[in-house]
Image (cartoon, rainbow, N blue to C red):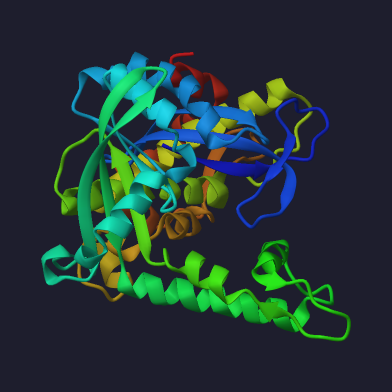
Length: 379
């Protein structure tokens, strides 16, 4: 599960509220959260929240979806990033029978304890996770919450390459603050770093608080998860990386389905986002089909490529581009016609499971009609 922020400046939408964006700035937006079957890459459900509602506060609402889907009765593990982290929520999820893995901030006391008390293991060969370019330590503790006690596992990792990258980015940002702290060239995120400098005297340059910089950069390169699943470190990394499936769907959504939320009412927004969700479902189905469908010989030959899976030769955007010249229109006799259909187009739609689609204009018009879509959706 993950959420994204959708900018919305419509005064007619009740959910539009000023909230914090990932870059540290604030804007009027909507919190759009989605639950995805990461194994299959398919969306299960979504919720919309006000733009000033943080991800952590949405878990209770999503629990209704999880219960309806019967996730607590399956072997499914709910994976969320650290924006959803809450000890109280984790103990409640554990008591309700859900399996989960949630990202944790490295300054959380139980993670910080592992980093401090078992630090040597993050540098020893015995702590290396083979072929994953990081070190890891597995531990556990008992968490207390409103739902009672829960024994939770902590999975803490150190990536040397990530450590150097984060340190470089941090020091570069401090350099920018030093160079531009008196002008308007700093971003809001950079201005938040002014706390790493002593208040300057008139006519003097900024002076860094080296002890604070050293203390805060100590955790660079570390990342962690907490959950009630008991697995080896490599398996946990595999599970957590599946969160990327949600990011893929968000990219599909913003790339193909939604450009603006400028609608006239909250109800219109709800209708728009339902259509967007249906569109995401269609695009993920198309993506899965492309991954298992061999490229027709006619298309492979035209691209001077050996036959392979469609996904190796086309992105979804390229599929749309390939077919966008096809037009459905009416002639002077008011009869439907399909124009600009090539043999490559026919081969492509046949490979995607729509054999004969371009043979019958009336059938194409029917498939594009709201009535047909309503029937397919069971509405």
